[in-house]
Image (cartoon, rainbow, N blue to C red):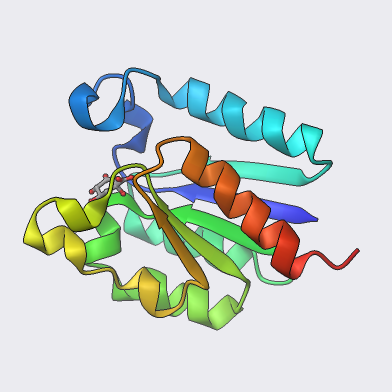
Length: 145
Ligand code: DQA
């Protein structure tokens, strides 16, 4: 099974940004956690990060027919981006939305997620583990083997 993990703006600043919310581990640690897990689970994974909405849309479009599942943390674009929602709908690849923090327990504006209109599942508030749970969900529900 081939999975694409997409991370949105400021997630490259993990370990620096708001440590009390997002933790002390940095983005490289997140990549290693995901890669090690996928190796153990015998899954192929690509991990992509961008601070630009259009780059995220392009990456989703490029995934068409190339990936069996998407794990996406659109970060701030979660709450604003119809373009990312439409790209996910266009490629129609099973998708899990992940948030490191529990967005429902934060500011009002974080309670709205456009991506949730498409994602088959949303995982929030579990830190790095949320990505691994998302991969499990895709494997359990959408693996072709
Ligand atoms: C986030 C939550 C978003 O509201 C925020 O803009 C982020 C990260 C999370 O992982 O908890 O950048 O998606």
